[in-house]
Amino acid sequence: MHDLRLYLEEASKRHDHLCPRLILGVRMAIAGALALGLEIPRQDKTLLVIAETDGCFLDGLEVTAGVSPGHRTLRIEDYGKVAATFVSVETGGALRLAPRPDVRARARDYAPSGTGHYFAQLIGYQMMPDDELFSMTPVVLSTPVVDLISRAGVRTTCALCGEEIINEREIMADGVAYCRSCSGRAYYQSTALAQWMIGGVPWVEAADAVKTGRR
Image (cartoon, rainbow, N blue to C red; front, side):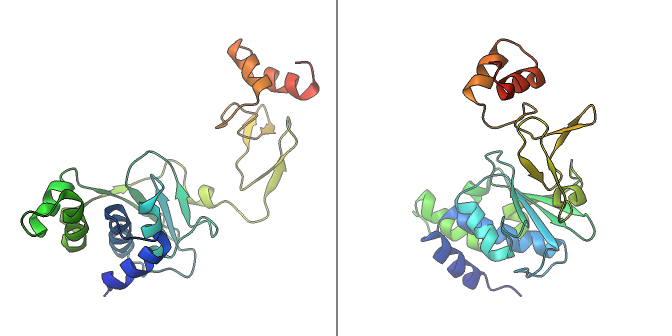
């Protein structure tokens, strides 16, 4: 049995206070891991959690499930949703959990009459049964878990910028390896490359021109 109170205490220390989304992270970690038949907090890498937002919710997940980005057992795909997918690394089985759409309204049923919305959520999210709090959907990862984890020691070099790429994150084009940035899939652009891209120049040509100083 899991002592919710102890998990909340530990998560609150990490987060500096207790809030509704922190509670959701703690509750979701317990529910997701148990549904996969995995004990928590993990001390190994048999559980991978893919969270769909950052912030308070993530602290609850991390502390309770024993996962972290540093151990490559916690990933963030920022969809702006308080949801997460729990993956058994050994079996590849995956379950996506998300709060039910009416969860805020239902929380009021567990709080004393007259309690404000925020405090009703603080109380209700601790007391509601898992099936009332969360939806739980079996899913198949778009990228298999073995590819997400990759292999230790695998590295290559981007053909354009020359920077090292680890974890098999290169983008292959015509048998040549490029990093995500040079392949036009970056979260940023250099100002010179951005000017070329606005002009409709293909990304390989534009990036190569910037690298060689032709732009």
